[in-house]
Length: 361
Ligand SMILES: [Zn+2]
Ligand SMILES: [Zn+2]
Ligand SMILES: [Zn+2]
Picture 1 (cartoon, rainbow, N blue to C red):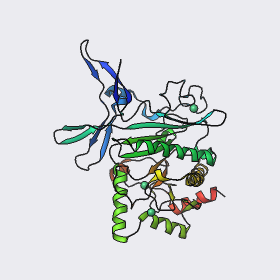
Picture 2 (cartoon, rainbow, N blue to C red):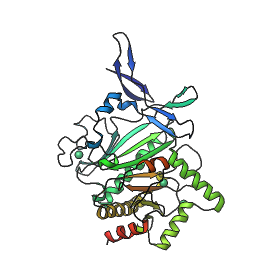
Picture 3 (cartoon, helix red, strand yellow):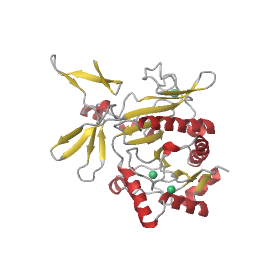
Picture 4 (cartoon, rainbow, N blue to C red):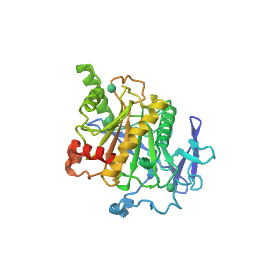
């Protein structure tokens, strides 16, 4: 059974379940819970509700991915036929064939709503997991990002920007994360190429660390730490994979994973959403090189990439510099990595960069 609640002019459907013949209970919304010691946030996403017995039935080692070869039943090849919600954004060619579409995630980690409600329990603090979770899909089932034309990749960045500009205006949204999972080891549960956007009320701990680090660096050395890094990499050349007038791709000095690449605008800019049309094409060029070099050098490994950009909470982030981090999944995090947060990378970033450079020749 479903009830409809109207918030901010949007209709939100919530599943309900019957707990007795008289009483009906709404499945709780997602919750953002804060770690009382570190201040870090976790999300308890009950929209994908699981009972303890579901975990014991799960086959962890054979996590299923929709078959790459058989795309007849692919949810994303025909989102309308498969019952996805209405498109939020759709790009089409002259012949009316769609090339890219954006729609709400059927199983969102966050629930749409106006403002997050505080939830307290004893010494703990939490809030409702208010937010937006959208899927960005390119048309071709078998063509992943590095296989697309530069202009098609630019279109993907254009869609990211379009949705960002819309969602940043929402009251409940303070941070927007845009990411992409490729391959089941990287968390992709549907083979069809897609990226995701999640707009949330809190800033992620990892971004917070980068924002604080960039501000501290600026205060002591009067310089953007990312501009500093980039100038050195351009001079030294050893870790640079690709560059043009506006963008650069390089293996970071302290790479967290083998063949990790960062893509950065050469001009100082804290805000991804301010990218121009010309810059989107230049970004697509360098980004395609980065992904293609990983695909060729490491035999098409699973990877994640995400955009790191300033929060949209109205505060001043002039010391930050937006960028994309691409992390090939060349190893699994084990006890040491999870406990310390220090990843063991099996190759020197300089050696990895040389191989990546050679693959583009
Ligand atoms: Zn498909
Ligand atoms: Zn900078
Ligand atoms: Zn970053």
